[in-house]
Length: 386
Image 1 (cartoon, helix red, strand yellow):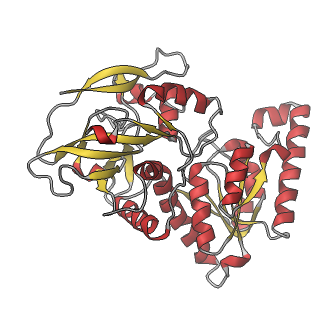
Image 2: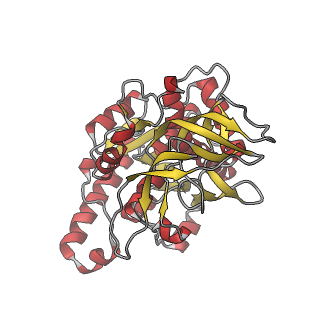
Image 3: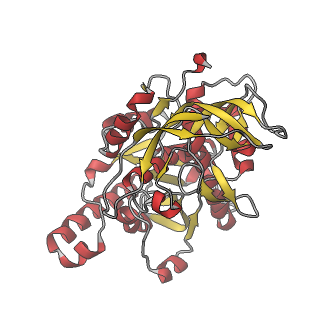
């Protein structure tokens, strides 16, 4: 059996972004505990963009494969099951669970559609998967399949990261009232999801973004928006900072404005949990914005994997640095149940859904920062055609 798919080919040794290309891939027949699914909707996520940009790695080279089928955020219909499959049945509508290989405790080591060798991602009309990689949606769910596709990567990562970050904060602030403390996040769908969780737990919440449409969306969530355009040169680069006086002065001016604004809106208390999934450009300023006994929490590295900070100052301030990656199977089940009960799920009813043939152009537009949505959803198979 073969399937229509979008692929990314291995680079040529020159560090240049790749492109999605159409291809027909071999699927094969399901083994005893394997299933064949038809993805219905997917959502653009960080690993897909990292794979296209070959940054920080060329995943094809790492996997020693000529091409990969990327994508790990989706909702799919189970089309065929192996003889010993017990977790799903033919016809089930499920949300993708992106772990290919986990450690002894269920935490991800390799991810479907990215660094897992010999495993195809969700940008295919048909997909061979392990049965545990599809989790049935709640029975008679109140939410659309498009919402669950948007939920599947970002909200799951947010759930796991927030659970750890909040527990770490409580470990030092067990008698503190969340209503008197602040959680802040740099713009992104994961940060938005975590700030929604923080708000549900009583925290005062702030989110930073630069596009007016996103600032408006943040305000509609009951989260205080902070306009990043007020500090446009907050883009720390150690080499330029130390060698270029003009760059240093422009950076310091933006950092000062950023810290002053947070000081004003928190009435001097500053930030107790800061969600930071960007990296080096904002890390220095983020640490300066922390209160004592605060947590800086990350589950991503959009603009760089390497950071540096003064360990002595972090120790003295009792700052906890949290790093997580995606989630366990039980995390996903918990997050889905919580979403169904409380409505903690992306509101995308008014947003455009991109077609299968539009996916490469959508990726290009996202890379060029031309997409306003935090959750760009696309159609892979038409649900009523299966």
